[in-house]
Amino acid sequence: MKRPRPRPRPHTRIPLRKRLLVRLLIASVLIAVCSVAATAWLAVTTTTRALREEQGQALADDMDILARLSGYAATHPDWSGVPATVRALSAQTAGVSP
Image (cartoon, rainbow, N blue to C red):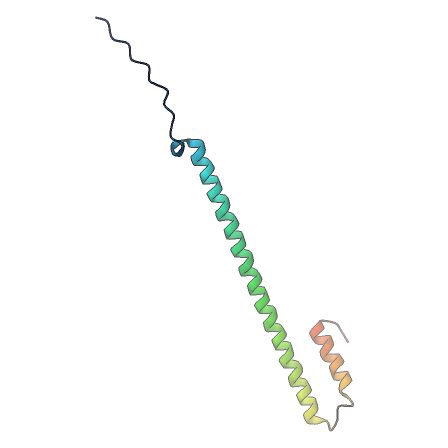
């Protein structure tokens, strides 16, 4: 008994969403987008923290200057000798030695 030959299957195309190449491309794009987003978030967070610390330091320096000049004003009758104090404060806050 002869077996009937199987019919040749018509050439069917795989749907685009089921192709491996398309899936790999989508996964790669998704990974790239997530990486860029995470890097941007990290950069913004780090920069914000650094700016807040710098602002806090500037405020602390300003308060120190105010306290020192107020102390000078309380202990001296006039401002004639203040330039030396101002130079010392300037050197301290700018990081330069007098």
